[in-house]
Amino acid sequence: MKTKLKSARATLWAIRTVGLILAILLFAMPELLRLYAEYRFLDPRAFRAVLVAFYCCAAVTGVALLRMDRLIRNILKGQVFIQDNVALIRQVRWCCCCVSLICVPAAVLYAPLLFVVVIMGFLCLAVSVTADVMDAAVKLREESDLTV
Image (cartoon, rainbow, N blue to C red):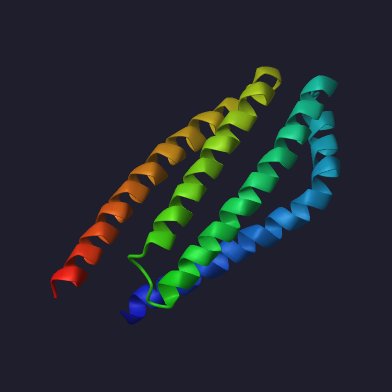
């Protein structure tokens, strides 16, 4: 059990570190993208599309990070198989889906974003399966609690 708690704590710190990096990127992204645009000769329309997609995705990613933070805190409190965790996982799934959909229009102007579209679409499916498995486990636990 101690190893699982260490893993959960490490995950919590990773989530918070990614959140901090995201917060820093909110301020640094225009300049970083400008430098990249000069290096790669990025079209001004593609520049705007990538920047708008980034900020839209950053908002959704922030929501996903908050949900994952709450999920891990629930787990650290010993609340693993509860309906709240299923709801949190499903919210993360929708965040993945939103990021994928947000990147589609920008990918028209900047093709490498197609990788983000595909990866986040796949992640949406994987998280969806995880949510369904977790939901089944919660129902089994609730049923088991009723029979004891």
